[in-house]
Image (cartoon, rainbow, N blue to C red):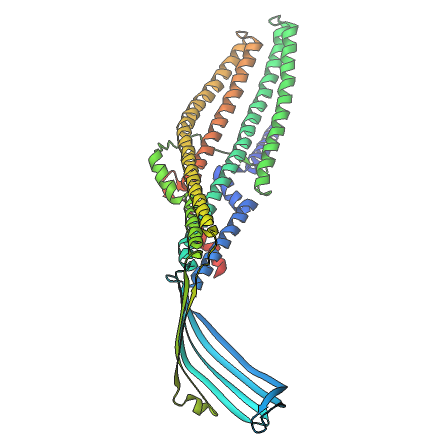
Length: 494
């Protein structure tokens, strides 16, 4: 093997290693990295967990509550005032006792009515010292009680409407935050892609300008071009190198911005790759609107706001009406000097109470405040309906833009291919003297604009694509609701 073959072999290995070191990265790779490392997404996940725990706590509060209370030891020694029946006078005597008690109970809320029921049992013991020494036991084997407010605001009933909606809102917001991140990543990814393609064009331009300058020197020798034209070729060669340096700087800046979003996890020397073929969605406004009204957190949040308005109005109205509370209890209890006596023939124990709260005369103040609250609620509802109407106009606008975006990308693809083919032809025409340098520069400018328009069209299409997905939270390719791995997050509470 001669020296020339060895050099060629080494060059092949060098360039192969260089190409191998350049890792191809796609838009889907960027989406994976941004979900994994974005601080904004981690914050959204924590917000979801907070809302989920609030809902979980609400569901747990619907279950029965068990309580076990025990006071094993309580001692008291003091001088107290007592009445002496024999001498008909008040005297001070020493009092000393040791007591203990314990009990168990189970209680259950009644969300539908706002009341609660409970079932319990307890036992107590007291031992007295001093002038009178005795031991006594008190036992309540069973006691059932119910407490029920009447005509009152029932917060449990409103929680049943509001908190499941809040959890649904948290889930949809988490998915929507992914789409927002994807939009941000799309913009930065295509900035890298544009800078990368323009950098490749600039490198090719340097190569072409070098070739043209060498050819120009030969043409000058045979008086085909003038010295001024050769100077223009030299200037073009210099400008091409300046453009290459600027393109390199723009590529570095674009990668830096994308890497910042990914918190430094962008692979080194990566090459962006995108498919020029884009899906033709054929979106229909009525279909998109129907999906959005079901899944979009905007609509869920507006529904939640309406429930909150109704809840606040219910609370204000009931505050100015008759209030009542009913409490009933039934049980068995007994006392004795021994535990046996305390459990022997327990006596019935009943209790009942009814409380009333009657609003006082307020000179019309309460009535005026209630009227203002109703007017504010009506205005708030009107504001919500206006916001919904404006939001749906934004959806319509994006659907119309998507159709235009598709057409722009199709035409930009054709324009880029035509501009590349035309420039190659014009370059050859210039080399044989059929074209001026100014005309060639214009074709080169057309080539650059075609590349820029192509990338700008793709960027706009995918930005609007994920904007519509953010509106619908539905995968536009298969019409399935978007979701995320909620179970792995919820597993933190298990």
